[in-house]
Length: 205
Ligand SMILES: N[C@@H](CCC(=O)N[C@@H](CS)C(=O)NCC(=O)O)C(=O)O
Image (cartoon, rainbow, N blue to C red; front, side, top):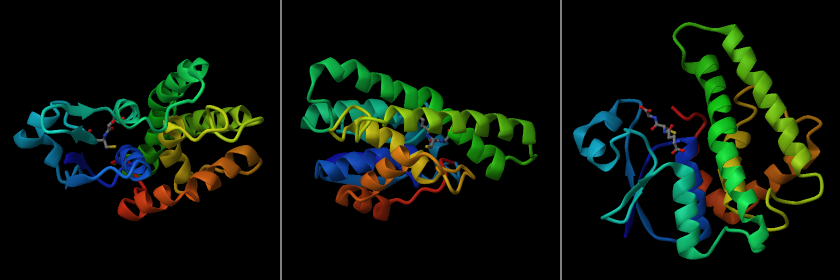
């Protein structure tokens, strides 16, 4: 059985959402990143980068949540695009999430909750970029239900967890009706409910 090393975090939630969609069995191994378990040599042997999530089949320990989503989607034939012409679009969303949404939303979490010394300029900067991201994502959903068209894919799973906690980050979806509708559609999925009941991250730390 696959092992998922994770914690109550945004990136772990993505993987649990996909595992619930595909009904894959997995053993969950909590790695408490707040008490430093990610630095323990036993865990470093699994992921030398010292981060969760990691999905392991016993031989291969795969890290990087979006890469895990992609591999698992290929393995289960679930959550990729139906139209091969949209394949590059799907990859672009995974990269966008990992390189833009994740870092900026994550920094808001840091500067509004975890940083020892406040830094209002940093917080304002990351909020500004996050608000731009919200407007961009809302616009992208003008004529479609999901980010890659009419089919729910791993692009939606990757983008969901940070948007799911926009309130907690002090971000508003007011006026972003397309994105609010999408958020509700994803929240309404039985697999999303199960994943959120299993993990309910309000922070990535
Ligand atoms: N790009 C990685 C980021 C993973 C990441 O930032 N993990 C955080 C929790 S969500 C972590 O393990 N932090 C502990 C640390 O860096 O010490 C992914 O998408 O999986």
